[in-house]
Length: 238
View 1 (tube, rainbow, N blue to C red):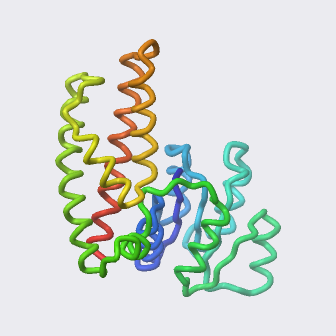
View 2 (tube, one colour):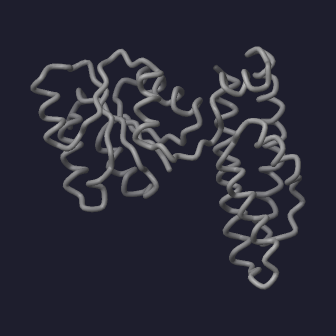
């Protein structure tokens, strides 16, 4: 599942993006409502929209109204983030079906609490760096080194998987799945672990093996590994 952020201020957009990604969420971004509508068409797994109100050409309330008018998207939850906190604006947002409103400047913990309440069962790409560091008993500098090491390992495994999928292989990949699982477990990379569990189940069901099934799950593993690698890169860069 993805979270769509719609924000025309590039600094605010980047802050929201980093906060959510660093806490394990998959994020797509749009600098304006027009591009956001295009992303909604292209990415069916978007499950939450975080949007500003004051934007050129089409403001946030107009954007919400367009989304809600589409039967495919009308149940999508919104978090409105804006410097506008007057009663009139809030009432309009509520009338459109939006119950979640944050006044700028955004406090990270307030945003994360709201996202967790809206998406309580969202599986994380990776647990937040502060939680991981505390769990491992490491200071932040040491944790960053762990992220760098895992990121380098993951990059090599990604290259292997992409190459072998390109050759049409579907089962006997030369991935180090044991090492990948151990590292993903240490960092609580839940989504990668879910796919690895599915592959283990598939491999144990001798009578149900098929090229299509293995290809499907390895392609999904590739996608999740890329997301994890991106999340690790963000963690290292912070």
